[in-house]
Length: 335
Ligand code: PBG
Image (cartoon, rainbow, N blue to C red; front, side, top):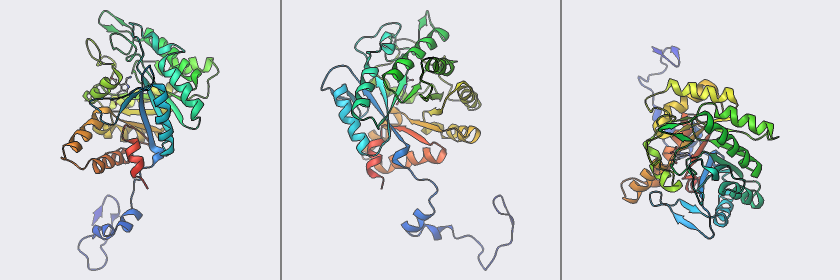
């Protein structure tokens, strides 16, 4: 008999087949041989911050997810920390948008203000900031636009400025989500020149042009007014290209690499983890969340069970960290 695991071997005893069910017979056996375990330490909780006070506005397409003013955001962060979740990632919706996304790199901008408040009240909570222009530009694109072109090199200068103001406001990690070329190097250089050598970069390294971001664009009010993001985000059909994207970001100085979305890209997570062995994050995006919520609300699936199963699949695929709107609910269910 030849097996890919055991090589050539002879079967012992009188059995003609393996009884793999033996170790599934009790929950204790199952837990003893379980290969993958979710932990609260894996989770990063995304939060949306808006100007104003006492605002808690539920996002229609994302039940349980809110746009929060800074005072409410701080309360939410206390709850997140008390649930044992180590980190949040912040997305800002500015009061005003313009064609160069000025609010993104304003030291008194919405995210900068929010980070300062969080780090003052809950210094132990890791504050990550999403670095992108799409929430701040009037056209909803991730960078500067000329005619129909989304410009690369002009945009990465602004992203570096944005990352710098986030880090100066106290962000523990900056997370560029734009997918322009060379932005990790530009950000790393700017942080280093400003004495922020120890601020890590979590790069959205393999980010696909995905239909699963729909609900997020409601939450972040960042739907592009014309065109789409296909000239910078990746084609969902590609896998080798993801390795080239990730390799480039590592060489430019990324500390954590992310694959996004997660569920339709578990093969990419596995390849990235196997190839580079880097701290690897998976973004369980808005559409993945909303689908489970919607089916759960209709009574078509067991929502909690499917939530835990999908989060476990991301970990099993090789993710060390999972950005997920389910973080609080999952943390409550974990032992
Ligand atoms: C861009 C950004 C997006 C998401 C995170 N950062 C949207 C986009 O690229 O259009 C999507 C996250 C989600 O769908 O949950 N700033």
